[in-house]
Image 1 (cartoon, rainbow, N blue to C red):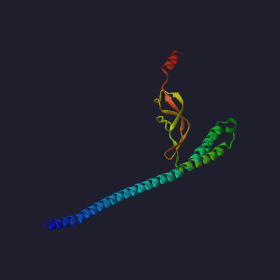
Image 2 (cartoon, one colour):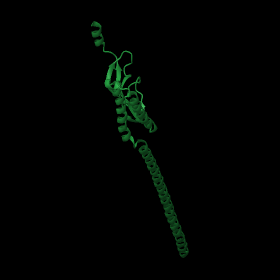
Image 3 (cartoon, rainbow, N blue to C red):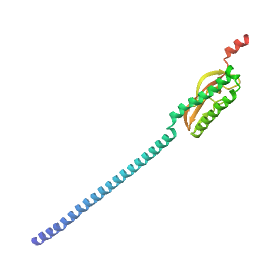
Length: 197
């Protein structure tokens, strides 16, 4: 009987050994599957991040290209404003010159300057360069540069009553601020002095 019990125990142990081996193999397989799934998720996450980064780069490049087309001529446009300013100053100077006023060809000369001025303004408009309308508007430090304050009882304080030099925009970007004179109320002390005189 002892031999029989010994045999049964050996048989049971022999049966348990393959089960233990199977359980160990199953655990290893589960671990391998878990680690493969984790690696797959990690790889998928890296891929998604890479795709997002590529998309962000593409958008940045598109914006840079758009900005280059829109504002690449910014410096040229800014410097071209000096030509327009000089034409306008020349017209005013010629009109006010006493000797030239007597010249019979003055009007023809002024017409030719006006044609050149209008052509230049037309070129600016075609290239999205627009004059900032300032007179009668509220002072905006983003668009205007105050050069002087002018006492004016007829205008609210902060309203632009004089345009010294026009400002321009290139699309939505400030090309040059308008140089302006801004209204302010008369000083009460000054009014008293004027009333006494």
